Length: 389
Image (cartoon, rainbow, N blue to C red; front, top):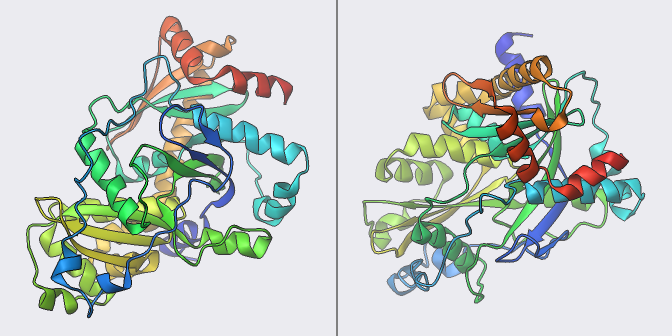
């Protein structure tokens, strides 16, 4: 088997599976339930697709409407960025240990053959996209109870309220929702293994297709996993006529149109690909808007449409995609080796800083800073659970 074939086999055979989930209502982190209640079904209205597209319907989705009172959630400096990740892990492991229905439901899915001396990773799923893209992001790395836990240092302090709002408002239009837009969300807990590293990660899911049904058996579980949706809204500078839009039908035509009319398209496309692929969201809904925040164009694609378009038109991007698991494993190996070499007897001092980018770097933190970061990030609930297990 050639090295190229091995890399392709690696990325296409290493997708994680859903083992748990949670729904958070808008507001405080405490308003969480471990169910599907926060998952919305999304679809494009029939009269919003050619050839029945009309100017009246075309312009009625104003994603700025209602934005004045919206405030995005900012993590206070004394609040853990990974609180809900850790809560999900505790609830999932507790459920499994009790041998409840969810255990039997996911039994066949979760029996991954993990034969590795490497530490298990706990993280937000965006870590894998950040590594694959070489994004300049920083993560706290906490070595605790033989697990390596990643916490992004970003607390949303500089996030723009309007641009946070319009994406959520667009999702509300797709869901036909009349509810007030807030920062509530639905996330999956995914289980998988990249190279030698088993992991549990949480990923936000924007919604599900109308084919999705709440699973009650293994077959339905796999069906649910294939019907999650990622939603993207982007600004275009070309205002097409209805006649022109009616001619944009095939996935290739859709992506070609977006490429010609969206700035920094390649960067966006590559990020969309990784977010959908690593996050198990096989459907991508792309919306375009004008500068007055009116929706111009909405199309639904499958993850395979993106892969085929990139393979045909963006060879270097495709090669990066097929080798992405190798890149992720390389960075995780660097982290794992460094953490083990520099770990201290005092658990609270095992906090490090990972700086991603073209040349990832991990470094120590002072004992004082490490203690402070540990106390903020690793919640008491999680510590108590790990002491029991």
